Length: 255
Image (tube, rainbow, N blue to C red; front, side):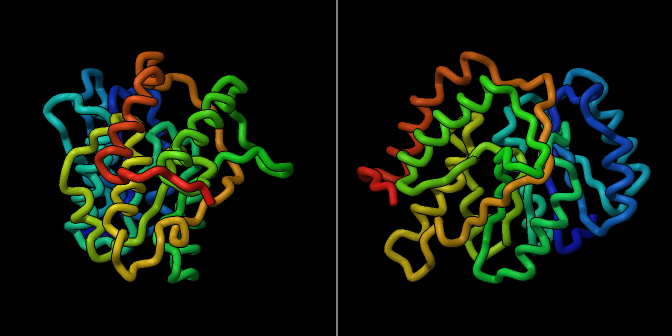
């Protein structure tokens, strides 16, 4: 597959009934964005759905199959590596249920085109007036507690690390920092930032917090069927500690 300037990874696990194929098809037909769908060992008919999209747009859609389910973190990591290897200028990942509409990809890309000092655009779920960010209240409060813990771990304020809509500029070393599997489970987004912190320490590269742009989304919807369990939430503190010990190893100073 020939990848154009922007390639988006879509991790998929048993998404037969949740993947809005028609929305993907319409967007792919109207834009030049490339997609890499990663089938993370699905046991339903997800593979058939993805094959249908690939058949419809053979030059714009690739399907990468993982033999067994390894989790969203590994699905995203393998997909991003494939996008980088195909020489995309911008690579990113998007939740398969389109909680964030695909149109936001174009906004993220426009920002990276315009702001050469920015390397990463993260969707931020902020329910400001004039926006349609619909999130269950309990999920919102859990998210705020987690965001506080993630900011303390990283050492700088960040509002929303876990939104499943992100776009990155492919820079020297970006793919290199994706070579090893993630250790943090579903909070791999925090781990990606921590790897950037570690790689920049003692160099002339700008600090991570100066190259991340948090983009307040106009639309975000809380789609039922999340695969994050209560046990996953219980492991959050442990995995944040693992990330800190592996990449940061200092007492954070929030600024």
